[in-house]
Image 1 (cartoon, helix red, strand yellow):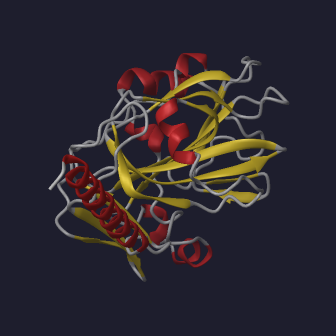
Image 2: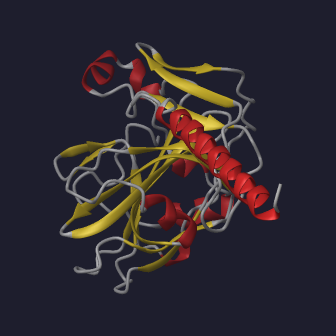
Length: 281
């Protein structure tokens, strides 16, 4: 058999193998989308990337929402107590704190936030507060500008949500480029398989609404392991959703002592609700 015929056969086999692999990957991806009431994370340690993160299918741990809260499918590790989160932003630059578990703008907000009213450039580094997995996010429009929000879950069952991100670093921009086009609908898109992230990794470099120099970050923390104290009040439980509000916690109580000193010295960001909070006592 001539060398040309051998080469042609080899090329044909390679094409067939690649085609089959492509079909297999497509089928796996089509069959692994989690439902909207499921938080899914992978427990592998093999996909740390700075850009274009590889997402490999491996052992998964799922937290599914039931009538009485979230239930883990699998064996989640115990959280290290007390849980300490690094602030995702430099609190020394902050001008006020938005307290979680209060009404703002006519709507109940289980998440809190940080305001930077002296910052007119919207430049503010946002970093990952704890090792976790990125499981969901959204690309939406607010006042005509694209905004991003991400949900991260730690292996032991703590979710933190960082929102109103304006300009992302390359790794996270690569992920949101696959999201639906931005509209005023802020429903989340699952990141499947999840992407591992690491404490102090830079997530974004600008936040808030640039057009109005409104510089702020939304930040919510949710403990999937148990319902919060506020939910023990029947009136609260009847009027607040179990998916977020009844699992939300006071992240101000989870900061390092040096950050706690700064937060305690700052005024409340909402002029109506002030420091009133269903979670922070």
